[in-house]
Amino acid sequence: MPERTRLPRYAPAVGRFVLVIALAMSAPGEYQLARAAGWGPLTAAGMPACMSVYACFAVWFVETRKKGEKGHSTAVAGAVGALSMVVVGQIVAHWIAAGYMYSSMTLTAAVSTVPGIVAGHVAHMIIRARVPGDARPQEPEEQEDQSHETGEAPVQPTLDGECEADEVTRARKRRPGRPGPSLDELRAAAEAIAEAGEKVTGPALAKFMGRDRRQGSRYLTKLNKAA
Image (cartoon, rainbow, N blue to C red; front, side, top):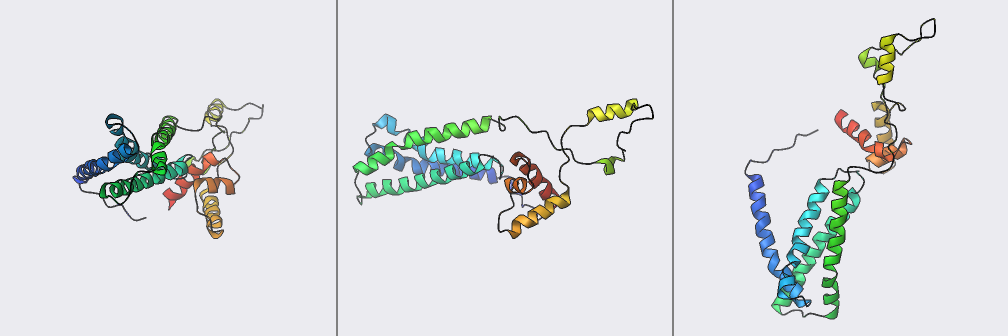
């Protein structure tokens, strides 16, 4: 797997500077768009936060979600929608400023929906960011067979039907759950999914192997580490 090229130390500072400049340049157009839709000078000042800043937040949320994790696809769709809204809004605002277009009932209706859409999506992202996982009862975690690595033999009862003390202690410490698939089984499943023309993702691996979809991300991580 090719190594990632590290960015220079000054790259984050330059990126923040460019972000601030871009937000400053987009704010006037979004403000004029709100004014054209009928908002007053004070309330129209919130439109840049509802468009450009919101788009930055949506992109940040996508980058913090793992691929294949629940909520990632909706986050991507929301980020694409936010960026599209910003681009279209800037174009329309400059058309109005240049005299190529005038405010209309359709434009006013479209701009009026922006705060509600932004509020709903931002609330969705905040809730997703605060909830670490699914609230449903967790399925027993899978236990991989590690007897060949540790050299431990299975617990065997003695002639009187009782186990030795140290073996009983080891048995109690073992976590319940059915054995997890081996690396060869995961590779075979990934090849079968790829041959079927589908993308190898965590949910796809879990579905192919008849396991819970929440186990899929663990399978995918295991495959990537072994690659």
